[in-house]
Amino acid sequence: MPIAEANAPIEAPRGLAGVIVTETQLGDVRGREGFYHYRQYSAVELARTRTFEDVWYLMFHGALPDAVQLAAFKAETAALRPLPAAVRDALPALARAGALAGPLAGLRTALSLLGASAGFRPLYDIDADRRRADALATVAAVPTLLTALHRLAQGQQPVEPRPDLGHAANYLYMLTGEEPDPRRVRAIEAYLISTIDHGFNASTFTARVITSTGADLAACLVGAVGALSGPLHGGAPSRALDTLDAIGTPDRIDSWIRERVLRGERIMGFGHPVYRTEDPRSRMLRGIAQEFGGPLVEFAVQVEARAEALLAELKPGRELHINVEFYAGVVMELCGLPREMFTPTFCAARVVGWSANILEQAEDSKIIRPAARYVGPPPPQPLPEVVPG
Image (cartoon, rainbow, N blue to C red):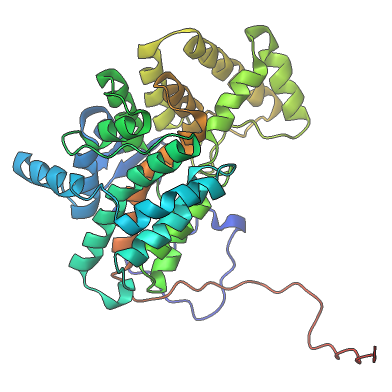
C-alpha cells in the first residue's frame, strides 16, 4: 500500500520510534521475534553459510548470484579496491589530522575526496547504471581507506589490496600485512555479513535523507558515517569490551553492574531500540566466540548471564538483553583487530547496506522534509532598540 501524503502535521513519537516513513525491498527487523532479514532471506543464515560478496550482490541486485555471476562480481569489485592517486596521496595528512579521532574521522574526508576525484555527480542527474557503478567503487574502496588510515596513524605504510583474496580476507590482509588465518577470516566475514544492514537505523535513515535531496553518493555516505560514529549507534563495540575490562573478575560483576544501574548509567552492550528479545546477531556471534574459547569468552558469558539477571531485577519489564556490540567486540578481539578498528570494521560492512538504501531511495524523487513543533518564545516579538556604543 502506498504511503499516504500528509495534508496536515502528524504527531510522531520521540525519536520517530515505530514510524513508517517509506517502503523498502531491502529487509526488515522484527524486534519482538528476534529476527531480521536481507530481502527474502534470514540475515543470520546468510552470515553462517554465504560469502560477503554473495550478500553484497543480493543487496544490490535482489537475488543471490549463481557461480558464474559470483565469479564475475568478485572480479569486478576486486578491481575497484585500489585507490585513485589523488586520494592515496592525501591519506598521510588525513591520518595525521585524525590521529586522535581514529579512522572514521579521516574516512569522512577521504570519501568526499574519493567522490570528487572520481567525478561523482548528483544522484538526481545520473541513471541507475551510473549510480550502481559509483556505489560499487565506493564500497570496494572503503576497506582500503580504513586500513590505510589506521596503518598510517600507527607509523606503518598502507598495504595494497590483493585481488586474489575475498573481501573479508583482503580486509584482514590490508589491516595486518600478513596472510590471514582462515578461521579468523570466516569469523570476521560472518560478523561483516551480519552487520550489512539492519532496518532504518540512524545512519541508514541519514543516508536516505541526504539521497532524497539528489546529492552525490559520496555526500550520502559521509552523512551515514557521521551518524555511525556516535557511541549510541556504531561507536559501541569497543566500549562493550571496555565494560568487561572494567569489571575485571567474576566476583566484581554484580557490584559493578548494580552500582552503575542504580546511578542511572548505561551499560554498553545491553539494550536495543528495536529488539525485545535476544539480538539474533549476538546469538550467532556468541557461538563464534565459543568456538574460539578461552578466558575472555568464558568471562563474557558470565557477565552476560549476571547482567541480564540484574537488569531484569532492577529494571523490571524493560527486556534488556545483549546487543550486537557485546560479542562483536569479543570476536574482533579474538581475531586480533585493534579496538580502534572495531567501529571502522562495522562501517566496512554497513557501507553495503547504506549504498543499497541509497540506490533504492534514488528511485524516489520526493525529498524527505519533516516538520518540528516550535516551543520557543511566542513570535513576533518587537526587536530591541539598538543602543549606540
